[in-house]
Figure 1 (cartoon, rainbow, N blue to C red):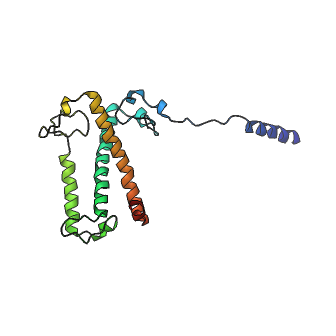
Figure 2 (tube, one colour):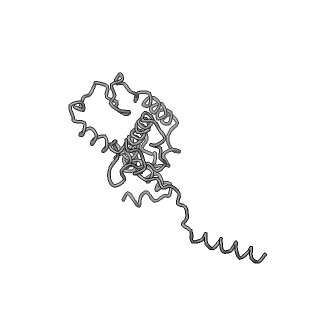
Figure 3 (tube, rainbow, N blue to C red):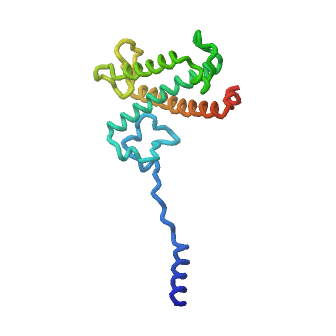
Length: 193
């Protein structure tokens, strides 16, 4: 029995010095190289895909997700501007008594809440592809009414502008989350003054 205990102890101590198996790390290099030149891929991160979503999805699904990221970024940009505007004291007529931030939800008249919800629904319906299938990408809402010369620009210029919009949206998403967290903590005034 003593020999068995010594033998098992020797095996256990030997395994303590064996190299531990490392879980596979997901890096930008292991993501699909198909997306290395996509919009939003900028230094120093390159392709940011911690969940390996790019390896699992079709190009159509990745384009749809990119469109959703673009839409959420646009909403977040409006949210940051709206938050900072109301925090500065700007109000619509009749809503002068409504506070800024989270406190506004409980103070808004019910009619305004319904107007807000209705506006969101109509905006979601209206912000569909109205180009007649001529949209260059998800989120391209040109309808032929206003032309700022997009079609006359080079592909490199378009990629740069789309990357700028996407990165501004990413920053705004982090910004609005930060504002909401600090508002909930009660110290948003400390970071805005």
